[in-house]
Image 1 (tube, one colour):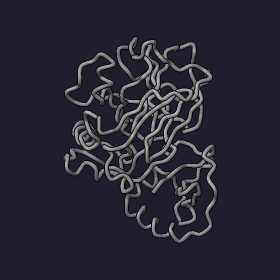
Image 2 (spheres, rainbow, N blue to C red; image 1 turned 60 degrees about the horizontal axis):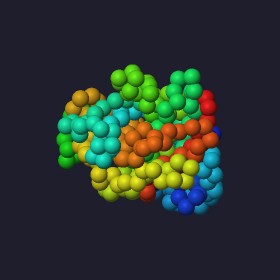
Image 3 (cartoon, rainbow, N blue to C red; image 1 turned 180 degrees about the vertical axis):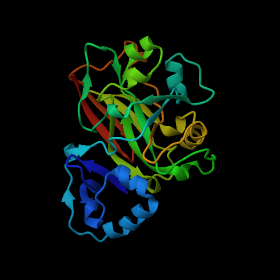
Image 4 (tube, one colour; image 1 turned 90 degrees about the horizontal axis):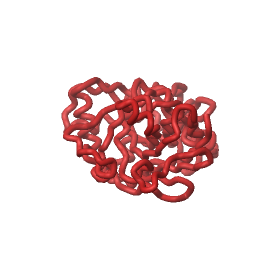
Length: 280
C-alpha cells in the first residue's frame, strides 16, 4: 500500500494518481497513529479499501511529508563504499550513527530554505528511508526486516561548513527544511528486497547521484539489528540509510545548492521529491 498525508491532514492510500482517504474506512488518525496501531489494523483496512469505488484525483502538490513528527530520525553516514572513498574517509567497521532532528522534516515538494547567515555550503544526499513498524530492542539479523513498516525517500540536506566546522554532524544536518521526505510511505510488503532499489538525485536536471541500494555497506537488516542493540527503535522512527557517491562537496569543482536550484531525489518504486532551493 502507498500511503500519503495531504495538507489538510488526511491520511490517504494512493493508487494510479487517485486516492482514498482512510477516514472512509473508519480510520481518522495520522500515519504515526496507524503505525502504532499495528499491522493488524493496516491489513483489516486494506480489505475495505478495495471495495471503495469513490476515489479522488491526487494533486501531488497537495502532499505533506507522510510522517511529520517521528520520535527520532536515526541517520547513517558513509554507508556506500564509493561515497566513503569520495569523502576521503575510511570505511566504517560499524554503522556511523548520527541524528537529524524531526523538526528538519519538510514536505516532498516544499522549498529547501538556506539561512544564508549560517551557511553557504549546502549539499544534497539522496537516501532510502526505513520506517520502523514496531518496538525493536535487541533484534536478531534474521528477524530484522519484520520490524519494517515501510519505506520512503528522503534528502539528507547538509550544511557542510557547519558539519565539518562543528566537528560533529547534528546541527549541520538538522536545520529547518533540511529533511525533505515522502512523497509516500510504501508498505514493506510492496518492497520485497530493499537492497535492489535504484536511487539518485539531480540538480537543475543534471543527474549527480545514480546508484543502487545493493551497494550499501550495512544493509537495512544489518542496520535495524545493530541499532536495536544500542537503543530502542520506536514505531514510526525513521532510519536514513546513507547516501551513495556523487554528493556536491566532493565534486571538482564542488556543486553546492543555491537559491533558484531545483533538486530531485528518487528511489525507484517509492517516489520522487522535487524541492526548489530558496533563501530562508
